[in-house]
View 1 (tube, one colour):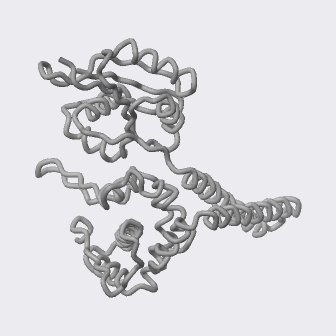
View 2 (cartoon, one colour):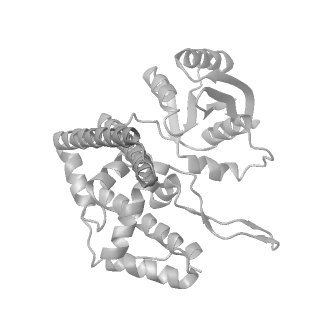
View 3 (cartoon, helix red, strand yellow):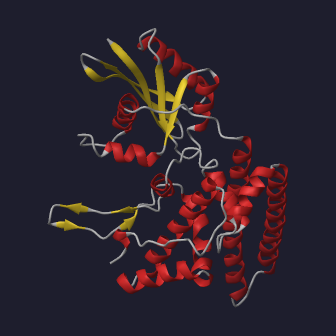
Length: 343
């Protein structure tokens, strides 16, 4: 007798790779169907119609997918809006689960099968649509980040042009004009961000608490909350660190192959980038973070690895303050050195 049905979706920019599975008392887990659909409205309709044909009536079917940047959002809103059970799982959860399976080759098909099996074996919560405020903040902070990147490129080009023996004055003028345009647009975005925060008293209060952490400013706090949807999918620090890609991966194979511990960088790059400058500021101005940095550098001599450890601690602090609703207290903060990074 079938007791559970799941649809695992591996999401890419242009397509959805889908597997259907069921769990029964007699045969256990059975992944029995596979198909690919386009990642747009017509494909979503075809997906639901196919799942309806391939699954048993009277048994609830849960759709399961990873949180993959922005590419999963349209299908997630479609399924949720049409009343389907949906769970969205952090990518590091699926990656960790995948490693427990006897799968030799990783493909889109095997990924969708693993997601489907994960959905059958685990008790998952229903996905809740992100609050509008976090969606708007994420759009604006990402736009601002791209503007800053473009401005840096332009400034480098302008510097190189001015350093030439015979600089082109037209090129210099156009580059300067583009920089001025970006400056104006960045100010517009800052004003829009301030307006959103001002209209949400609770959000403003939370940001005020987070910015009590040394080195963490309003833009950092806003970026972290935007990229995590207010920590909606995060239930502990380990998940948060994995989602950001600041977790440490060890490469070991018996006794013959031993790799150095490395930051995975498989998570949200916007979250990692947002932690860089606050970590440098905290190392300069906060005693506890400076002690952590010095202790790690004295152990292995690699400054960047030590900076990443501070980034991780600050991100964990932001999560703790958001959840406990208490400001930063330097008298009670405790800095622990991650074992894999020490030595």
